[in-house]
Length: 578
Image (cartoon, rainbow, N blue to C red):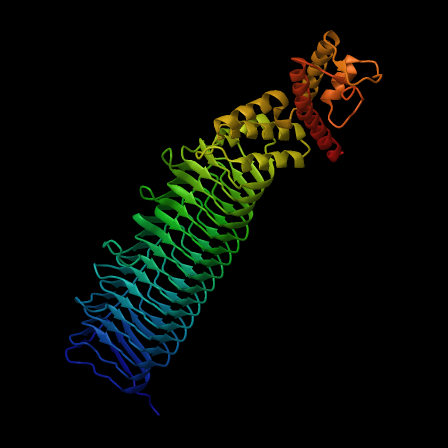
């Protein structure tokens, strides 16, 4: 009725402890023991396997089954810890152990590991790779305070499955990359106060590869996370939020954060001291909550974007405001923001002539463009649709592309004359649509005088693009009737021509037609007959001018058509509004 078991403390084992394929229902507890040879537990079945503060040249437990806990705590290994295909019924502990792997071998080889509860490696120190490919941990997996040191140090865990949270925090550091490709994490991924370093070779593996992964909770990567190398989160799904607050990413020669098609159920939080040396790439990402970059500092390499988020969809606000500093362009083409897109108190630092902000073919309920200082570069808002446009004349850039921009309201409610300087900043020259859009906005808010002023300015700007004959005709329209937007000027000119005509015909009256008895000649009525088209007072068909007065008649008829139609058009606009 006694169970087989092994308990040793302070022993030195000079030969090989070989329990391969053995079945021990009881516990194996080895405390402060020293092994001259690698103990072998391959394929065995054990109730409990516990090694504490032992020194070993390595350990092999490939394919073994431990019914309860498996603990390798505080041990020093000068070779590989082989846990390949190990099955643990409760928890696996590797806390405070140190593994020095020889060249070309793994420090911890735990491929296809299966742990029914949690795996803890708090304070683990490894000088070689840790391999957890296709492993499964039912509860939490923790590497808190662990250090992966050396040129070959890395954590290889593609297709890892963790039912709870994954903890790479509280001082965790890795001199090589972390590979979580295709990993499934049921809880949150914690990276606070961690230091990750990618390979030195250009184009090498990322410092953190979270490609095609699934995270059921949050990614908590703020509060002291430092990454030297790139972070790859392409095609990853995060049910909660991604928190990079106060994180520091350093990859100045390339893309610091690559997150194409990232899906985030909550917020993307890059606020409060988030620093990126290298491009932040969020193209085609989906953020259910808000994308927050308040107080962040983004720096792209020379000529590259600091923030590239083309095609992103944000369910709430996209805030690039309150102290955001971007050294390099911000590219936001074809984005959709359900609430506010904000650049208030932001710094867009690019050289003059380069693109500072590209926001083409996008849509937002509210666009706030009030940078801390006027950008030296070009701001491109072409073919974007917003509900409310909020800006500040002090922050208007020197070059501004507004072709195709549509908005329902512009705040503050500046006068048409003030807004004209806003429209004249297109580096490509005159474009008619921004003038039509601004005039439509003024008409929609009952400011018809401002609308006419803008449309008149549009015709004057357009004149510079015409050929010389057309320019002369355009100038004549401007001087005479203000392109139809100054109907009172047409009334005044009509009165002038009426007076001149009346005086001329009173001095040199025309001769009557035929032999009949014409009506008495009235110079004023005769002039009105010439000036007013369609209206017939009977004077024009009863009297005929001769000599130089015939050219006066032609001039009065021509001028009458132009001025009268201008007056009618102006009256028609008034009646339509009524």
